Amino acid sequence: MDHSKKGMRIGILTAGGDCPGINAAIRGVGKTAILEYGMEVIGISSGFLGLINKETIPLGEDDLSGILTHGGTILGTSREKPFKKKAGNELLFDKPQLIKKHYEELGLHALVCIGGNGTQRTASLLAEEGLNVIGIPKTIDNDVWGTEITFGFDSALWIATESIDRLHSTANSHKRIMVIEVMGHHAGWLALYSGVAGGGDVILLPEIPFDEKAVCDYMISRANRKKPYSIVVVAEGIVHPENKSAAQHIGEMIKKNTGLETRETILGYIQRGGSPSPMDRILATRYGSSAVEMIAQEKFGGMMAYVGGNIVEVPLSEVGEKLKTVPAGFSLIEKARKMEISFGDQ
Ligand code: F6P
Image (cartoon, rainbow, N blue to C red; front, side, top):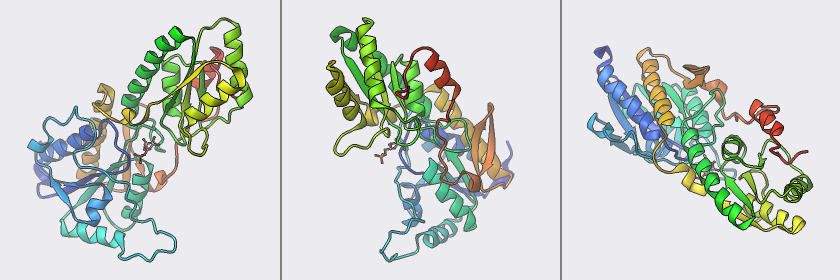
Protein backbone atom coordinates (compact mmCIF):
# COMPACT_ATOMS: atom_id res chain seq x y z
CA MET A 1 0.00 0.00 0.00
CA ASP A 2 1.25 3.44 -0.92
CA HIS A 3 -1.00 6.10 0.53
CA SER A 4 1.29 8.92 -0.53
CA LYS A 5 -1.36 10.06 -2.98
CA LYS A 6 -3.93 10.67 -0.23
CA GLY A 7 -5.91 13.78 -1.02
CA MET A 8 -5.57 13.29 -4.77
CA ARG A 9 -9.03 13.28 -6.34
CA ILE A 10 -9.70 11.63 -9.67
CA GLY A 11 -12.79 11.60 -11.87
CA ILE A 12 -13.94 8.77 -14.14
CA LEU A 13 -16.32 9.00 -17.04
CA THR A 14 -17.60 6.55 -19.64
CA ALA A 15 -18.56 7.87 -23.08
CA GLY A 16 -19.75 6.58 -26.46
CA GLY A 17 -21.56 3.28 -27.06
CA ASP A 18 -21.50 0.97 -24.06
CA CYS A 19 -19.95 -2.49 -24.08
CA PRO A 20 -19.32 -5.37 -21.68
CA GLY A 21 -16.36 -4.69 -19.36
CA ILE A 22 -16.86 -1.00 -18.61
CA ASN A 23 -17.81 -1.66 -15.01
CA ALA A 24 -14.78 -3.92 -14.64
CA ALA A 25 -12.61 -1.00 -15.79
CA ILE A 26 -14.34 1.44 -13.42
CA ARG A 27 -13.71 -1.05 -10.62
CA GLY A 28 -10.05 -1.47 -11.67
CA VAL A 29 -9.53 2.30 -11.57
CA GLY A 30 -11.53 2.83 -8.38
CA LYS A 31 -10.18 0.00 -6.27
CA THR A 32 -6.56 0.67 -7.21
CA ALA A 33 -6.97 4.40 -6.56
CA ILE A 34 -8.72 3.99 -3.22
CA LEU A 35 -7.07 0.89 -1.79
CA GLU A 36 -3.52 1.21 -3.11
CA TYR A 37 -3.05 4.96 -3.25
CA GLY A 38 -5.63 6.37 -0.85
CA MET A 39 -7.04 8.60 -3.58
CA GLU A 40 -10.62 9.85 -3.73
CA VAL A 41 -12.71 8.83 -6.74
CA ILE A 42 -15.69 10.63 -8.25
CA GLY A 43 -17.89 9.21 -11.00
CA ILE A 44 -18.99 11.62 -13.72
CA SER A 45 -22.49 10.94 -14.99
CA SER A 46 -23.28 10.24 -18.69
CA GLY A 47 -19.92 10.87 -20.33
CA PHE A 48 -18.79 14.42 -21.09
CA LEU A 49 -22.37 15.59 -20.51
CA GLY A 50 -21.78 15.03 -16.79
CA LEU A 51 -18.82 17.41 -16.84
CA ILE A 52 -20.82 20.01 -18.75
CA ASN A 53 -23.72 19.76 -16.28
CA LYS A 54 -21.53 19.03 -13.24
CA GLU A 55 -23.38 15.83 -12.44
CA THR A 56 -21.42 13.37 -10.35
CA ILE A 57 -21.96 9.96 -8.78
CA PRO A 58 -20.16 8.96 -5.57
CA LEU A 59 -17.69 6.11 -6.06
CA GLY A 60 -16.61 4.77 -2.70
CA GLU A 61 -15.19 1.32 -2.15
CA ASP A 62 -18.65 -0.12 -1.49
CA ASP A 63 -20.01 1.27 -4.76
CA LEU A 64 -17.36 -0.72 -6.61
CA SER A 65 -18.28 -4.06 -5.08
CA GLY A 66 -20.29 -6.52 -7.15
CA ILE A 67 -20.02 -4.62 -10.44
CA LEU A 68 -17.24 -6.68 -12.08
CA THR A 69 -19.67 -9.04 -13.81
CA HIS A 70 -22.31 -6.46 -14.76
CA GLY A 71 -22.83 -5.26 -18.34
CA GLY A 72 -23.37 -1.61 -19.27
CA THR A 73 -21.91 1.21 -17.19
CA ILE A 74 -22.95 2.26 -13.70
CA LEU A 75 -22.02 5.84 -14.64
CA GLY A 76 -24.23 6.04 -17.73
CA THR A 77 -22.95 7.19 -21.09
CA SER A 78 -23.67 9.62 -23.90
CA ARG A 79 -22.28 10.50 -27.31
CA GLU A 80 -21.78 14.15 -26.30
CA LYS A 81 -18.83 15.69 -28.20
CA PRO A 82 -18.09 18.98 -26.43
CA PHE A 83 -15.66 20.25 -29.07
CA LYS A 84 -18.02 19.66 -31.98
CA LYS A 85 -19.50 22.89 -33.31
CA LYS A 86 -22.75 22.58 -35.22
CA ALA A 87 -22.51 24.42 -38.56
CA GLY A 88 -24.61 27.60 -38.57
CA ASN A 89 -25.48 27.29 -34.89
CA GLU A 90 -24.17 29.85 -32.43
CA LEU A 91 -22.84 28.14 -29.34
CA LEU A 92 -24.92 29.22 -26.37
CA PHE A 93 -22.01 28.49 -24.10
CA ASP A 94 -18.48 27.25 -24.50
CA LYS A 95 -18.65 23.59 -23.48
CA PRO A 96 -14.88 22.98 -23.19
CA GLN A 97 -14.56 26.03 -20.92
CA LEU A 98 -17.48 24.78 -18.83
CA ILE A 99 -15.80 21.39 -18.54
CA LYS A 100 -12.56 23.08 -17.42
CA LYS A 101 -14.45 25.15 -14.86
CA HIS A 102 -16.27 22.14 -13.42
CA TYR A 103 -13.09 20.02 -13.42
CA GLU A 104 -11.50 22.72 -11.23
CA GLU A 105 -14.58 23.24 -9.04
CA LEU A 106 -14.73 19.48 -8.40
CA GLY A 107 -11.09 19.65 -7.31
CA LEU A 108 -10.01 16.95 -9.77
CA HIS A 109 -6.33 16.18 -10.18
CA ALA A 110 -6.95 13.81 -13.08
CA LEU A 111 -9.72 12.54 -15.32
CA VAL A 112 -9.97 8.98 -16.66
CA CYS A 113 -11.95 8.79 -19.92
CA ILE A 114 -13.20 5.32 -20.86
CA GLY A 115 -14.38 5.19 -24.46
CA GLY A 116 -13.81 4.56 -28.13
CA ASN A 117 -12.28 6.72 -30.87
CA GLY A 118 -14.49 9.77 -30.36
CA THR A 119 -13.86 9.71 -26.61
CA GLN A 120 -10.10 9.46 -27.04
CA ARG A 121 -10.23 12.42 -29.43
CA THR A 122 -12.14 14.53 -26.89
CA ALA A 123 -9.75 13.38 -24.14
CA SER A 124 -6.82 14.50 -26.29
CA LEU A 125 -8.37 17.95 -26.84
CA LEU A 126 -9.05 18.30 -23.11
CA ALA A 127 -5.41 17.41 -22.43
CA GLU A 128 -4.45 20.24 -24.82
CA GLU A 129 -6.66 22.53 -22.70
CA GLY A 130 -4.50 21.66 -19.71
CA LEU A 131 -6.54 18.94 -18.00
CA ASN A 132 -4.71 15.88 -16.64
CA VAL A 133 -6.31 13.16 -18.73
CA ILE A 134 -5.78 9.42 -19.16
CA GLY A 135 -7.70 7.40 -21.77
CA ILE A 136 -8.86 3.78 -21.58
CA PRO A 137 -9.97 2.18 -24.88
CA LYS A 138 -13.23 0.25 -25.06
CA THR A 139 -15.52 -0.81 -27.89
CA ILE A 140 -16.93 -4.00 -29.34
CA ASP A 141 -15.61 -2.78 -32.72
CA ASN A 142 -11.93 -3.16 -31.67
CA ASP A 143 -11.11 -0.20 -33.91
CA VAL A 144 -9.25 2.15 -31.56
CA TRP A 145 -5.89 3.07 -33.03
CA GLY A 146 -2.77 2.38 -30.95
CA THR A 147 -3.97 -0.75 -29.13
CA GLU A 148 -4.14 -4.32 -30.37
CA ILE A 149 -7.35 -4.92 -28.48
CA THR A 150 -10.15 -3.03 -26.78
CA PHE A 151 -12.28 -4.61 -24.09
CA GLY A 152 -15.83 -5.39 -25.17
CA PHE A 153 -14.60 -7.04 -28.34
CA ASP A 154 -14.09 -10.51 -26.86
CA SER A 155 -17.55 -10.55 -25.25
CA ALA A 156 -19.23 -9.40 -28.46
CA LEU A 157 -17.24 -12.03 -30.36
CA TRP A 158 -18.63 -14.74 -28.09
CA ILE A 159 -22.19 -13.55 -28.63
CA ALA A 160 -21.80 -13.23 -32.40
CA THR A 161 -20.09 -16.62 -32.69
CA GLU A 162 -22.73 -18.35 -30.59
CA SER A 163 -25.42 -16.79 -32.78
CA ILE A 164 -23.73 -18.05 -35.96
CA ASP A 165 -23.41 -21.51 -34.37
CA ARG A 166 -27.15 -21.50 -33.78
CA LEU A 167 -27.87 -20.48 -37.36
CA HIS A 168 -26.04 -23.53 -38.70
CA SER A 169 -28.61 -26.05 -37.49
CA THR A 170 -31.65 -24.16 -38.75
CA ALA A 171 -29.87 -23.38 -42.04
CA ASN A 172 -29.13 -27.09 -42.48
CA SER A 173 -32.71 -28.17 -41.65
CA HIS A 174 -34.19 -25.88 -44.30
CA LYS A 175 -31.26 -25.94 -46.76
CA ARG A 176 -31.17 -22.16 -46.78
CA ILE A 177 -28.67 -19.38 -47.07
CA MET A 178 -28.47 -17.48 -43.79
CA VAL A 179 -27.17 -13.92 -43.83
CA ILE A 180 -26.18 -12.55 -40.42
CA GLU A 181 -25.26 -8.92 -39.78
CA VAL A 182 -22.92 -7.95 -36.96
CA MET A 183 -21.88 -4.45 -35.87
CA GLY A 184 -19.01 -2.52 -37.39
CA HIS A 185 -19.52 0.54 -39.59
CA HIS A 186 -15.96 1.08 -40.70
CA ALA A 187 -14.02 -1.81 -39.17
CA GLY A 188 -14.73 -5.47 -39.83
CA TRP A 189 -12.93 -7.06 -36.86
CA LEU A 190 -16.10 -8.50 -35.37
CA ALA A 191 -17.40 -9.82 -38.70
CA LEU A 192 -14.02 -11.34 -39.55
CA TYR A 193 -13.42 -13.02 -36.19
CA SER A 194 -16.97 -14.23 -35.63
CA GLY A 195 -17.20 -15.31 -39.26
CA VAL A 196 -14.09 -17.46 -38.99
CA ALA A 197 -14.91 -18.71 -35.47
CA GLY A 198 -18.49 -19.54 -36.51
CA GLY A 199 -17.53 -21.32 -39.73
CA GLY A 200 -19.01 -18.74 -42.10
CA ASP A 201 -18.74 -19.41 -45.84
CA VAL A 202 -18.76 -15.78 -46.96
CA ILE A 203 -17.52 -12.87 -44.83
CA LEU A 204 -18.06 -9.32 -46.05
CA LEU A 205 -16.04 -6.54 -44.42
CA PRO A 206 -16.12 -2.75 -44.92
CA GLU A 207 -12.39 -2.92 -45.71
CA ILE A 208 -12.74 -5.30 -48.69
CA PRO A 209 -14.89 -4.06 -51.59
CA PHE A 210 -17.02 -6.99 -52.73
CA ASP A 211 -18.54 -7.95 -56.05
CA GLU A 212 -22.18 -9.06 -55.89
CA LYS A 213 -21.67 -11.46 -58.79
CA ALA A 214 -18.72 -13.12 -57.01
CA VAL A 215 -20.90 -13.68 -53.92
CA CYS A 216 -23.75 -15.17 -55.98
CA ASP A 217 -21.45 -17.34 -58.08
CA TYR A 218 -19.96 -18.77 -54.89
CA MET A 219 -23.42 -19.52 -53.47
CA ILE A 220 -24.36 -21.33 -56.68
CA SER A 221 -21.10 -23.28 -56.77
CA ARG A 222 -21.67 -24.43 -53.20
CA ALA A 223 -25.24 -25.49 -54.05
CA ASN A 224 -23.94 -27.35 -57.14
CA ARG A 225 -21.40 -29.16 -54.96
CA LYS A 226 -24.32 -30.37 -52.81
CA LYS A 227 -23.43 -28.12 -49.89
CA PRO A 228 -26.88 -28.01 -48.31
CA TYR A 229 -26.64 -24.49 -46.88
CA SER A 230 -24.38 -21.43 -46.59
CA ILE A 231 -23.67 -18.87 -43.89
CA VAL A 232 -22.92 -15.30 -44.95
CA VAL A 233 -21.55 -12.98 -42.24
CA VAL A 234 -21.69 -9.27 -43.03
CA ALA A 235 -20.54 -6.16 -41.18
CA GLU A 236 -23.25 -3.49 -40.90
CA GLY A 237 -21.12 -0.95 -42.82
CA ILE A 238 -20.50 -2.86 -46.07
CA VAL A 239 -23.32 -1.13 -47.92
CA HIS A 240 -25.63 1.78 -47.13
CA PRO A 241 -28.90 1.11 -48.93
CA GLU A 242 -31.83 3.38 -48.11
CA ASN A 243 -34.30 1.98 -45.56
CA LYS A 244 -32.56 -1.39 -45.51
CA SER A 245 -29.89 -3.05 -43.45
CA ALA A 246 -26.77 -4.56 -44.99
CA ALA A 247 -28.13 -8.05 -44.28
CA GLN A 248 -31.43 -7.32 -46.02
CA HIS A 249 -29.62 -5.88 -49.02
CA ILE A 250 -27.31 -8.90 -49.35
CA GLY A 251 -30.10 -11.42 -48.65
CA GLU A 252 -32.42 -9.92 -51.28
CA MET A 253 -29.57 -9.64 -53.77
CA ILE A 254 -28.66 -13.35 -53.37
CA LYS A 255 -32.30 -14.44 -53.59
CA LYS A 256 -32.89 -12.40 -56.76
CA ASN A 257 -29.75 -13.56 -58.57
CA THR A 258 -29.57 -17.20 -57.53
CA GLY A 259 -33.12 -18.23 -56.73
CA LEU A 260 -31.82 -19.87 -53.56
CA GLU A 261 -33.89 -19.54 -50.41
CA THR A 262 -32.37 -16.90 -48.13
CA ARG A 263 -33.08 -15.53 -44.64
CA GLU A 264 -31.57 -12.61 -42.73
CA THR A 265 -30.69 -12.05 -39.07
CA ILE A 266 -29.57 -8.72 -37.62
CA LEU A 267 -27.84 -9.23 -34.29
CA GLY A 268 -28.07 -5.59 -33.17
CA TYR A 269 -27.65 -4.47 -29.57
CA ILE A 270 -27.59 -8.00 -28.18
CA GLN A 271 -23.89 -7.81 -29.10
CA ARG A 272 -23.28 -4.99 -26.65
CA GLY A 273 -25.27 -6.21 -23.68
CA GLY A 274 -24.73 -8.49 -20.74
CA SER A 275 -21.88 -9.78 -18.66
CA PRO A 276 -18.28 -9.40 -19.93
CA SER A 277 -16.23 -12.45 -20.88
CA PRO A 278 -13.38 -13.44 -18.53
CA MET A 279 -10.82 -12.02 -21.02
CA ASP A 280 -12.65 -8.68 -21.12
CA ARG A 281 -12.84 -8.56 -17.33
CA ILE A 282 -9.10 -9.10 -17.15
CA LEU A 283 -8.24 -6.62 -19.89
CA ALA A 284 -10.50 -3.95 -18.40
CA THR A 285 -9.02 -4.55 -14.95
CA ARG A 286 -5.47 -4.26 -16.31
CA TYR A 287 -6.30 -1.05 -18.15
CA GLY A 288 -8.05 0.45 -15.13
CA SER A 289 -5.32 -0.39 -12.66
CA SER A 290 -2.54 0.76 -15.05
CA ALA A 291 -4.32 4.07 -15.63
CA VAL A 292 -4.12 4.80 -11.90
CA GLU A 293 -0.42 3.90 -11.85
CA MET A 294 0.06 6.56 -14.55
CA ILE A 295 -1.84 9.08 -12.45
CA ALA A 296 0.21 8.21 -9.35
CA GLN A 297 3.36 8.89 -11.39
CA GLU A 298 1.75 12.10 -12.67
CA LYS A 299 2.17 10.96 -16.28
CA PHE A 300 -0.79 12.42 -18.13
CA GLY A 301 -1.99 12.76 -21.72
CA GLY A 302 -1.78 9.06 -22.63
CA MET A 303 -4.13 6.23 -23.48
CA MET A 304 -3.59 2.78 -22.03
CA ALA A 305 -2.96 0.25 -24.81
CA TYR A 306 -2.36 -3.48 -25.19
CA VAL A 307 0.76 -4.06 -27.26
CA GLY A 308 2.56 -7.40 -27.48
CA GLY A 309 0.99 -8.73 -24.30
CA ASN A 310 1.86 -5.67 -22.22
CA ILE A 311 -0.17 -2.70 -21.10
CA VAL A 312 1.62 0.41 -22.30
CA GLU A 313 0.82 4.08 -22.72
CA VAL A 314 0.42 5.74 -26.12
CA PRO A 315 0.10 9.53 -26.47
CA LEU A 316 -3.53 10.62 -26.82
CA SER A 317 -2.39 13.17 -29.40
CA GLU A 318 -1.36 10.25 -31.64
CA VAL A 319 -4.57 8.27 -31.14
CA GLY A 320 -6.86 11.11 -32.16
CA GLU A 321 -9.88 9.85 -34.00
CA LYS A 322 -7.84 7.48 -36.16
CA LEU A 323 -9.45 4.15 -36.94
CA LYS A 324 -7.74 0.80 -36.67
CA THR A 325 -9.27 -1.14 -39.53
CA VAL A 326 -8.48 -4.67 -40.71
CA PRO A 327 -5.31 -4.27 -42.80
CA ALA A 328 -5.03 -5.57 -46.36
CA GLY A 329 -3.41 -9.00 -46.36
CA PHE A 330 -4.21 -9.56 -42.65
CA SER A 331 -3.00 -13.07 -41.77
CA LEU A 332 -6.41 -14.40 -40.67
CA ILE A 333 -7.91 -13.32 -44.00
CA GLU A 334 -5.17 -15.12 -45.89
CA LYS A 335 -5.69 -18.29 -43.82
CA ALA A 336 -9.45 -18.10 -44.37
CA ARG A 337 -9.03 -17.74 -48.14
CA LYS A 338 -7.01 -20.95 -48.19
CA MET A 339 -9.99 -22.69 -46.60
CA GLU A 340 -12.37 -21.46 -49.32
CA ILE A 341 -13.95 -18.75 -47.22
CA SER A 342 -14.98 -16.05 -49.65
CA PHE A 343 -14.60 -12.31 -48.99
CA GLY A 344 -16.69 -11.57 -52.06
CA ASP A 345 -13.81 -10.05 -53.98
CA GLN A 346 -12.58 -12.89 -56.20
O1 F6P B 1 -19.58 2.07 -30.88
C1 F6P B 1 -19.80 0.78 -31.18
C2 F6P B 1 -21.09 0.54 -31.88
O2 F6P B 1 -21.69 -0.54 -31.24
C3 F6P B 1 -21.00 0.30 -33.39
O3 F6P B 1 -20.57 -0.96 -33.76
C4 F6P B 1 -22.40 0.59 -33.82
O4 F6P B 1 -22.47 0.86 -35.17
C5 F6P B 1 -22.73 1.78 -33.00
O5 F6P B 1 -21.98 1.64 -31.80
C6 F6P B 1 -24.18 1.96 -32.67
O6 F6P B 1 -24.32 3.14 -31.97
P1 F6P B 1 -25.59 3.64 -31.15
O7 F6P B 1 -25.50 3.04 -29.79
O8 F6P B 1 -25.40 5.12 -31.07
O9 F6P B 1 -26.79 3.22 -31.91
